[in-house]
Length: 406
Figure 1 (cartoon, rainbow, N blue to C red):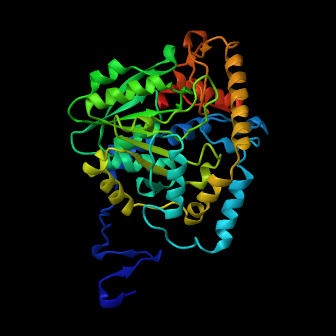
Figure 2 (figure 1 turned 135 degrees about the vertical axis):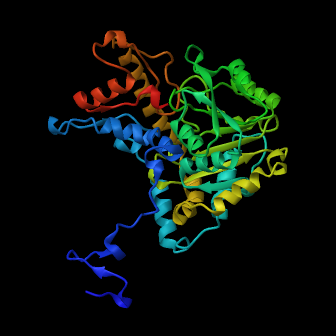
Figure 3 (figure 1 turned 90 degrees about the horizontal axis):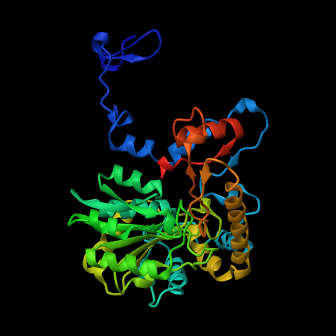
């Protein structure tokens, strides 16, 4: 059948073919699916590793429940539910009809003001709404900061062990990573001398995760002060990942490293995901804790806003609920959650003592994680920690993550 203009014809299967029947040369093939920074970032992400471990669960094993211990989503357990005040706040925001449209790219003003006041409770200076940028969870906050700092030839200092998303984002952004060690025998404290040794004139920032994911540690005031002073000497800003803020149930209370904002500029990343147990609500923030104005002078604030201008926003109705969520959630609720986490950590630590081949170098004191050491000499036929995790998922339907993913 002749097509319009006579230039094409339809074959028996109804598909169009170009003149002469030659197959077209498609120009949208993505070589990054086999290699390149996107593939490297995606394959090494915590989600990719978790998917691999989850895929090992034996579906033929019957109705045995899966015990998901591999990620920080507390909602998998019925005992971890958000505060009724938080749920009411979202319902009120929805029913008000005031939060159905777009928000400012940096976030709803009332939400930013409420978060500034919330964070200022623990600081020796006051933050304002202009210091707060709202993001779609802490994941987007990490994306924004890595993208802002990624300049040709630059490098960033990451903790080892640390949260894998930093590795994925830096790989994708072509930002060189240099690792400093956390010392398990000292409560996973930063190896400050080692950190200084790997920094150079191209280093742009230090990432500090406190309370720690995945180590479960909480840093003391003195150790945080030493980290801040080291960063000042090196001329580096600190990215403070405090998504587990206030989830400290051991000897050390939670202290934000922004307390030392007059010593060194600090960019704090946080969210309501963990303390309020609502990771699916996707509401996070970037806070510039910089009373000396160093970040503003260096145009870092403007770069953050520029990136957010070409990115997405958290749901407006969740933003609209933030002032009520923060104001109306009672301390009794937070204390109950801390008691549950403390009891779970105690039980986990005690049970690990009875397992040959697995040791815990430091009892968890915060966040929702514990890091253990696996001695493969006790296990015949296991190649590495990934093999162990996959076989544990297959044989017992228990999901844990290998250290290689951190």
